[in-house]
Length: 444
Image (cartoon, rainbow, N blue to C red; front, side, top):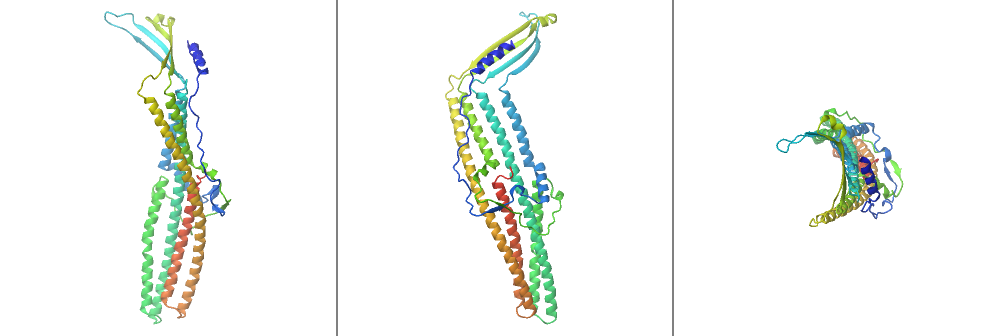
């Protein structure tokens, strides 16, 4: 019995085919390189060389809820792919039972045990196209998880450096406050000694009070930023390790050659995700096309039936049957479904092209931002050095009676503002490099 089914299946399989068009990635017209006239800098493969940051990223990849949900979706789609693929193979069931009729037509009770085989022959490739669509859906989920991973790494790094910058700014304010306190002490002594007016003393008190007002706001921002970072790594703020720094350092740079090839865009998981969505849409067009052709199925049974237990093993029965299901009249349903699937494919293709173009723009913009952020930081460093010289000169001339105390206060404010601006420029360098890392698809 079974050998007949196998033989018939092999014969039909020899004549089966897979109707439809195989997927081809659309050609996208892009420049051969980015518009980058100068050598630029980036972290390269070891983007995050801060050991504390890398440990936070590792914890986030393990405990972040969005990341765990993405991994769970991958497992779900892997099982869904198994369901789809199982349709390519026969379904075998075993049925055991008995029956007894009562009344006028009552007969001998029957016992039966039989194996049943059913198989839809994939004559036109319909099931294989469904399997390809399921595979593309699975790969789309994998790439979606890679997108989540890339965004998570970038967000953890961004939040970490923003926290460091806030702590550095708080340290600058605290150091400036100590300078203000010393200025108040000296101004008071000079006022009491009759060397200066009370106005200079009051001015020093105002500047000290003004500096104090910055600290509570910074402490609030630090607490909120720690809470944001803790949420990203799936923990509470109080469980975060202490983050102590001497100062926020500029990033460690390596050079990237001029004219970074645009083929690096293929590394981006969002583009790969968009491509898998297009592949799935292409397969579904073929599914809807082959839905318009007849379907072939085979059914076979082999078992034992008897009216008594003692004869149960001696009366075998078998059955083999085949069937064809073909659409005849459906008011254009199958044709409309194929047209709708084709429209979905066209939308997916446009989305793919848009994602590639957007990615190219993001990389190009990030390269410009990185280069200019470095120039801004160097200018701010020169400004800090100049402000230090200005303050030293103002203090010296004030003690010698050449300038007023207002000039000293102005020099102190200039240095304070310059140090704050430098700190923010260094932060912006880190953020621009993180943006470049994300635009290039991370380390995938």
